[in-house]
Amino acid sequence: MDKKKITAIVIFAVVAVVIVLIGLLGSKLLNNDTLKDYSTDDLTFQSTETLNKKTVSGYGVYFENYAGDVIVLGNKENKADLAKLGYEDLNLEKYATVIYEGEDDTISELKQSDDKKFYYFTYDYKEGAMYETENDFWLINFACKLSEQKKYEEKFIEWASTVKFK
Image (cartoon, rainbow, N blue to C red):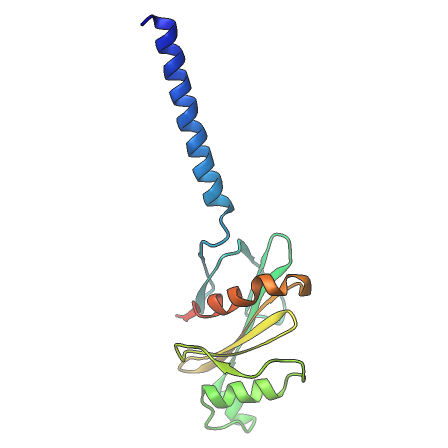
């Protein structure tokens, strides 16, 4: 075999390997089913979206995707402060019921996660998930544009199940 044919075969092989690698890397970057880790000082969670952490007045937790059509936001309520307001002896179920009953009539029924770690309800474009830590209760909302509800409904429950407190 002459040098030109060997060179052509080597170049073809290298180009083929590069194309395969670009394809694999591209599919990995575009794969929205891969969970990514996010954290604040108080908690961690996972999402299939690429999210940016932001500081927004009124929220202890706030993340949104680049397009601005998916957000994760939340706050904690201190148990001692709630007791001073008359909400004594709250457990997660009672807290979730108080939050649920304060919402409008368009929300779904209050449900408990399969692993019993949180309660949640869904309505229109968001899911509200409630959690309990030693000193606080948390309400974390996973929300999207109304037009994207079907796309994210199950994903929000999956993301809610990944929330862990530090």
